[in-house]
Image (tube, rainbow, N blue to C red; front, side):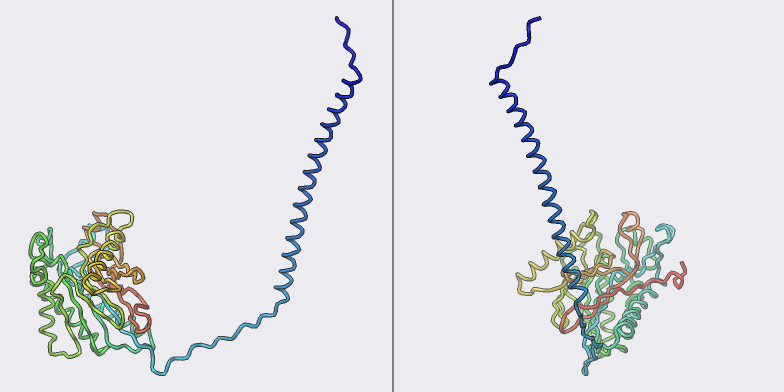
Length: 360
């Protein structure tokens, strides 16, 4: 072995300097860590002191809440016009409970009961649930599909002929309007036709209204009620009709033109698109409106803030809705209050089905 080389004085000095530098770096790192921990502790202490000070201020604060008094009723009373929407009755249709897993049943007898409950329910809501309001009459919308009609397979499955359904539906609706006249004094009716009452296989555009069985029902009602000055029966000559209650401008239609709704958004996509298109058209012809009253989807979905009041149905969930896996909803009709100050205010459904009384 070769003898170990001895380090020179300079090499010894360099080695010692490297050791000292390494120790210095380690010490500096420790100092930085200790400094960071000290700053963190100080920040925590400062935050705690602030929170403690704030807590002491809250504890020491003397609150003097005002004593609110119950608002007194105005001497003249609140004025409003209630609105009842009747549509999608499908008078004459038969719904077999077994074919919809017993979530609904329907026939002419049940139709008469449900129409009666719709009118009676409107009175109960206005009189018993919304006391203290002075009603300046009532607005009734007849939104179409009053009778089942002969479209699809309904000609073979209806309980009675379409003409018989016209008579039965007209009698029930006239009784309901007379009942409202007794309660509210004045009744104004706006009526549009639906798609079920057409006499053709496919929808038509020329003479669409006057070729509808719904139109025949409305004409019979207007002639029979003509002697009652409390009831004003309006029948639209077009697919839609304009209406104003206080300051709210409405458009009323049945809604079959708003096609679609099988996606995840259900009725919303075609409905809101239809409202947008209708607003553009009405604006262009100088008749802007605030709210669309529409029907056809058999689903009550009142959304006045979005400019639409979608009505439910009297017939309820039927075989078509069941097989198409459409959303279930209990048979109901829309009811709401119009006020001079705020337009549409209280909105409530009128539930028209009672399983026990209907016997299913």
